[in-house]
Length: 162
Image (cartoon, rainbow, N blue to C red; front, side):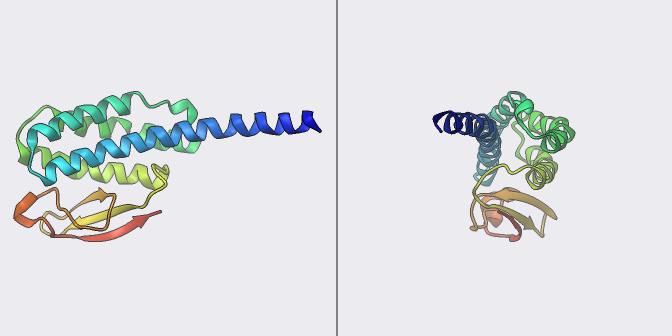
């Protein structure tokens, strides 16, 4: 009986650890994205650039071997696109240019979020009709990263990932 319990415990530990590691990694990636979004909401180009550099570091440190094959394939298909936009956001202090890249960046991260469960919390996919672009948010309050204080609450939630 003790041997059976030990075997079950070992199998459970072996299975849970990679899933936990993946959730921690993907949550860090999403948190880094939210930091960029929040900097753009506040029209802080310097902070957005810094947070985009952090996103790139998290992205490059992802352990894809811990992901299930389907999720790894989805991740690998979007990794270069995410890196491209994060790099461009990090290399400029021009808020307009950062926001241009943020639109593609958000679209690609949403594709990843639909394929890979990035977090246990809901992810809101918000839309700005003036910019005709989307962004991801961790709460239901609309805070538009494309226009900052000029149109802070312009937008609507278009989809929720749970």
